[in-house]
Length: 371
Image 1 (spheres, helix red, strand yellow):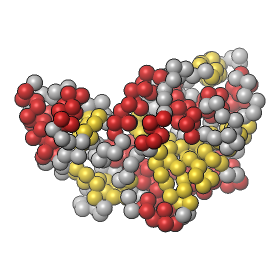
Image 2 (cartoon, one colour; image 1 turned 90 degrees about the vertical axis):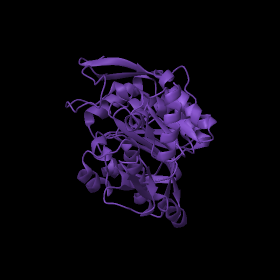
Image 3 (cartoon, one colour; image 1 turned 90 degrees about the horizontal axis):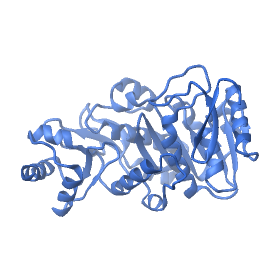
Image 4 (cartoon, helix red, strand yellow; image 1 turned 60 degrees about the vertical axis):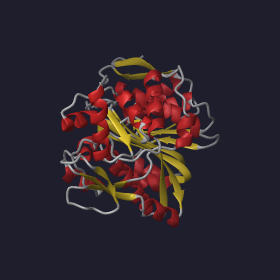
């Protein structure tokens, strides 16, 4: 093992990484090849996802591979014979990726060292993973054009502050959408990112179908299917809208048109998950974060088909001046009362429902007073 490197294991894959690797949080650039241990959960989800959607003979690209952690794990743990390409324009990263591939006897993995946009301009892939440090916008258009019809693009964005509404001008410059602070800003941020993919794909007469789009820790992650056709692109565009929020009444939702200058958007109003995909995804015991993966998969399955714009128990408590009951008990109460309701992965104290804010507050008062 080279001096200055440590060996870590994720899943069943061994990796050499800089000794000063980031163990938690979003991480910072240090001049070394980047590796963030906290992203193991996200990489575990990538493995679970890949095991369901990868097919024999496909071309699979990890475009900004760094140490090769994600791409090598996909090649090593998804159980499919495919052409795996790992790329990073930093020569130090490319050398380390080759060393990590050899460490895991992954001789079939091809390592590239070039600008991702140049690579995408010359080849077509069935799966393209873009996991940059910060915003992914520099690579999205190239990825959308390089992805095969019916293929999948996986996008990570760690520039969460603009998408949350902290820096709405930055969000508008990057994504062409206005972000806004709200109790459900994590969701509007994800929907802005997803909507950006939809709009950029439509420029090329291609439609985006979200398969798995989520928020976790310090980042957003979108897995979307790319489908050719102007008609399908137009259909996807019709699912764009603007998030509305009334701070006095707590009413919220997504409107086809911007109603006030404080509305967030344009953003994606449609589903963030594929029901069929989530039904088949399983977190196996070989994953380092298997317990967390199982829990979040369960929550995602509950969220399928639920209306957008979640509510937080804390905001309901503040509005009614009543202490919040246990979330699961309140969700069960809403379901028993005939409403649609579920937990949400966006907030451990959040819920989704088809009730209006007024109706939800009435149910909250009834239930909280009985506890």
